[in-house]
Image (cartoon, rainbow, N blue to C red; front, side, top):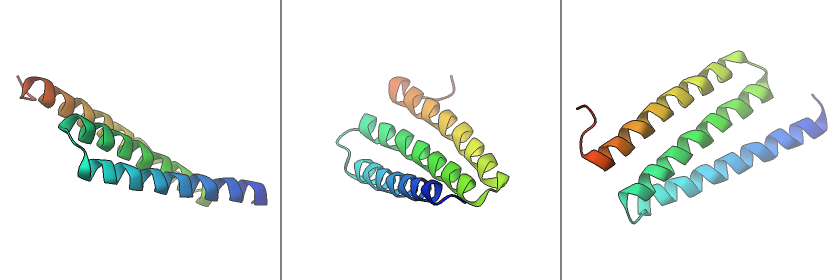
Length: 92
């Protein structure tokens, strides 16, 4: 693999981990439930980015399928949480 590509992947990996740490901190100390939902939404996006970065690094398609699964579950959970915060119930 090209050394510049390895450097870029390593930098993206470190940035994703750092973003996940910041999201976890906001998830734990968020002043309101809306802040916590936003932090959780950003956290699953960072996890998806991390899986994609690992897929590029190792060249394995299983990481890309895992990223797709994270994206689908993250979107559905975010919609369910926001609907619960708005109306107080998920299923009408």
